[in-house]
Image 1 (cartoon, rainbow, N blue to C red):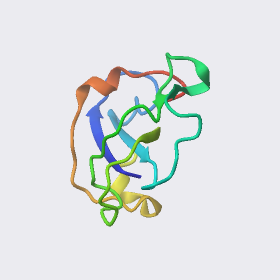
Image 2: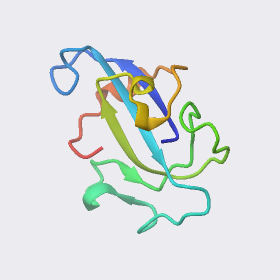
Image 3: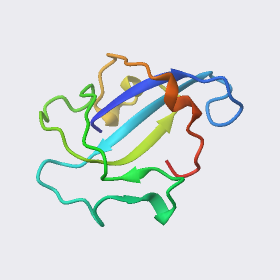
Length: 106
Protein backbone atom coordinates (compact mmCIF):
# COMPACT_ATOMS: atom_id res chain seq x y z
CA UNK A 1 0.00 0.00 0.00
CA UNK A 2 1.32 3.39 -0.96
CA UNK A 3 -1.42 5.48 0.54
CA UNK A 4 -5.09 6.15 1.08
CA UNK A 5 -7.68 8.91 0.96
CA UNK A 6 -11.37 9.23 1.68
CA UNK A 7 -14.52 10.74 0.26
CA UNK A 8 -17.92 11.39 1.76
CA UNK A 9 -20.05 8.95 -0.22
CA UNK A 10 -23.74 9.60 -0.75
CA UNK A 11 -24.56 6.70 -3.04
CA UNK A 12 -26.27 3.38 -2.42
CA UNK A 13 -23.48 1.05 -3.60
CA UNK A 14 -20.42 -0.08 -1.61
CA UNK A 15 -20.20 1.91 1.65
CA UNK A 16 -23.67 3.40 1.17
CA UNK A 17 -24.51 2.57 4.78
CA UNK A 18 -21.37 4.22 6.21
CA UNK A 19 -21.34 7.27 3.88
CA UNK A 20 -17.54 7.09 3.75
CA UNK A 21 -15.35 5.39 1.20
CA UNK A 22 -11.65 4.85 1.68
CA UNK A 23 -9.50 4.34 -1.40
CA UNK A 24 -6.13 2.61 -1.23
CA UNK A 25 -3.54 2.59 -3.96
CA UNK A 26 -1.40 -0.54 -4.25
CA UNK A 27 1.95 0.74 -5.44
CA UNK A 28 4.60 -1.42 -7.06
CA UNK A 29 7.69 -2.19 -5.01
CA UNK A 30 10.69 -0.08 -6.05
CA UNK A 31 12.47 -1.74 -8.99
CA UNK A 32 9.66 -4.22 -9.69
CA UNK A 33 8.26 -4.29 -13.25
CA UNK A 34 4.56 -3.77 -13.89
CA UNK A 35 3.06 -6.96 -15.35
CA UNK A 36 1.78 -6.09 -18.81
CA UNK A 37 2.87 -2.45 -18.54
CA UNK A 38 0.27 0.34 -18.63
CA UNK A 39 -3.16 -1.15 -19.42
CA UNK A 40 -6.82 -1.15 -18.41
CA UNK A 41 -8.09 -3.69 -15.87
CA UNK A 42 -9.55 -6.74 -17.62
CA UNK A 43 -8.70 -4.93 -20.88
CA UNK A 44 -11.77 -2.66 -20.42
CA UNK A 45 -10.93 1.01 -20.12
CA UNK A 46 -14.02 1.67 -18.01
CA UNK A 47 -11.99 -0.13 -15.31
CA UNK A 48 -8.97 1.17 -13.39
CA UNK A 49 -5.86 1.70 -15.49
CA UNK A 50 -3.03 -0.26 -13.93
CA UNK A 51 0.63 0.79 -13.93
CA UNK A 52 -0.16 4.01 -15.82
CA UNK A 53 0.04 6.50 -12.96
CA UNK A 54 3.09 7.11 -10.79
CA UNK A 55 1.94 8.68 -7.53
CA UNK A 56 2.04 8.12 -3.80
CA UNK A 57 0.01 9.62 -0.97
CA UNK A 58 2.62 8.24 1.39
CA UNK A 59 0.47 7.57 4.46
CA UNK A 60 1.03 3.78 4.27
CA UNK A 61 4.32 1.90 4.54
CA UNK A 62 6.19 5.13 5.12
CA UNK A 63 9.47 3.21 5.33
CA UNK A 64 9.37 2.96 1.51
CA UNK A 65 10.37 6.39 0.23
CA UNK A 66 10.05 5.76 -3.52
CA UNK A 67 7.24 6.90 -5.82
CA UNK A 68 6.27 3.95 -8.04
CA UNK A 69 3.45 3.01 -10.45
CA UNK A 70 0.05 2.18 -9.00
CA UNK A 71 -0.86 -1.40 -9.84
CA UNK A 72 -4.31 -1.58 -8.29
CA UNK A 73 -6.86 0.32 -6.23
CA UNK A 74 -8.91 -1.02 -3.35
CA UNK A 75 -12.01 0.44 -1.72
CA UNK A 76 -13.03 -0.20 1.86
CA UNK A 77 -15.66 1.14 4.25
CA UNK A 78 -13.24 0.88 7.20
CA UNK A 79 -10.62 3.56 7.74
CA UNK A 80 -7.33 1.99 6.55
CA UNK A 81 -5.37 2.93 9.67
CA UNK A 82 -7.63 0.54 11.61
CA UNK A 83 -6.69 -2.41 9.35
CA UNK A 84 -3.41 -3.64 10.84
CA UNK A 85 -2.03 -5.54 7.85
CA UNK A 86 -2.09 -2.41 5.63
CA UNK A 87 0.49 -0.53 7.73
CA UNK A 88 -1.22 2.85 7.22
CA UNK A 89 -1.32 5.85 9.52
CA UNK A 90 -4.41 7.97 10.21
CA UNK A 91 -3.20 11.04 8.30
CA UNK A 92 -6.23 11.55 6.06
CA UNK A 93 -6.54 13.13 2.64
CA UNK A 94 -9.90 13.88 0.99
CA UNK A 95 -10.84 13.72 -2.71
CA UNK A 96 -14.54 13.97 -3.47
CA UNK A 97 -14.02 13.31 -7.20
CA UNK A 98 -13.27 9.63 -6.65
CA UNK A 99 -16.69 9.09 -5.03
CA UNK A 100 -18.15 8.95 -8.53
CA UNK A 101 -15.99 5.93 -9.47
CA UNK A 102 -18.40 3.00 -9.54
CA UNK A 103 -16.66 0.45 -11.80
CA UNK A 104 -16.85 -3.08 -10.42
CA UNK A 105 -13.17 -3.51 -11.25
CA UNK A 106 -11.28 -0.64 -9.66
